[in-house]
Image 1 (tube, rainbow, N blue to C red):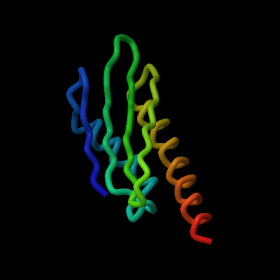
Image 2 (image 1 turned 90 degrees about the horizontal axis):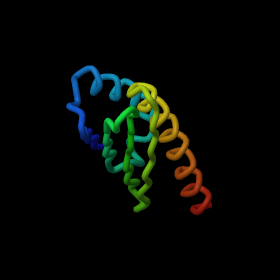
Image 3 (image 1 turned 90 degrees about the vertical axis):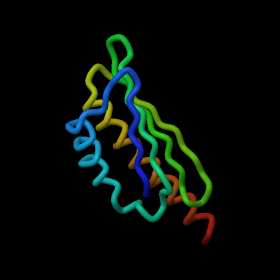
Image 4 (image 1 turned 135 degrees about the horizontal axis):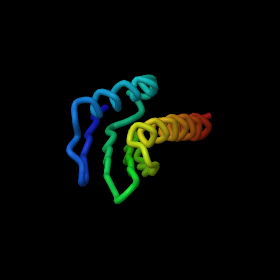
Length: 98
């Protein structure tokens, strides 16, 4: 699983990168299902926007987005939604093969 992190109107710091990587430990179980994760963290006026594009091995692509007033809160919410999406997609694939 490849992880790319891009900042828009924001320079990605080591603290932010480490925080995101620690949150991604929550989805370690899905390394075999995901080709890559492309994160975009953006500062927009008074809010933080965290987005991710996830490409699954079976050809499905998903785009998730969270925006809040706190960067770390946006990242936490985004990773929680990503976890839910992975579980949902995994169930769809397993149901299809039964």
